[in-house]
Length: 119
Length: 111
Figure 1 (tube, rainbow over the protein chains, first blue to last red):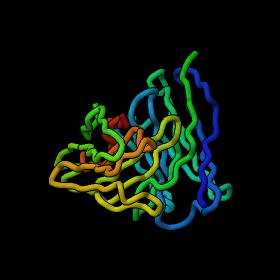
Figure 2 (cartoon, each protein chain N blue to C red):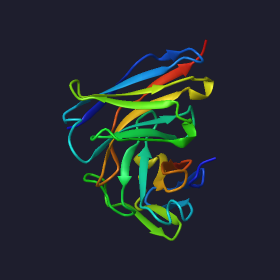
Figure 3 (tube, each protein chain N blue to C red):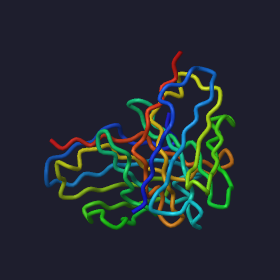
Figure 4 (cartoon, rainbow over the protein chains, first blue to last red):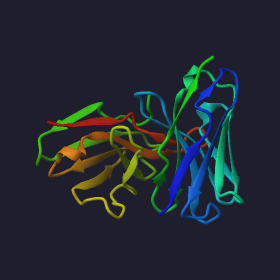
């Protein structure tokens, strides 16, 4: 059974860089056919796709984030990461990592981690 | 403002059939498949329907999806109290060099 777990600081200061890591267990992050994804949910709001990275290393990002997001993979640790630069209070949200299968969609999710942007 | 439009709320009584709509455009639903997610309170979303009308293993056949033109629907028959949750539609959008988009979500209340 594939499991994903987010980790990282729960509090980030404005203008700094938010950094989160997702550790994948029960499956290899280098397996073909999967996109490793970040999705966020503002408090009491809907879901917003941040981006994903294909097992080949190709990345896709939400244009609305204006190039602030960077997703990378560490295959040796079976982890992938998100960096979001120049954060503001508007980036306060629950951040989920998820696996997207090419045959279905986002089929496995982490439990989510709340990141608050505040001084 | 979400790219995909859903009603903010829906309700039904146990045993009833309810439908949740998702409206989009030619750049998303009109040219790509639709997926649906269920989010129970305090939990991560769960994939409910993919490719318009396919259920992942383990999802009861009470849940069904359909798509027509630039709109899609999720139907839940034999409504149960544990179906009370937020439901989101999702699709790929071909505009702005491509992006994944979600509906704003529909809160389903079982009366």
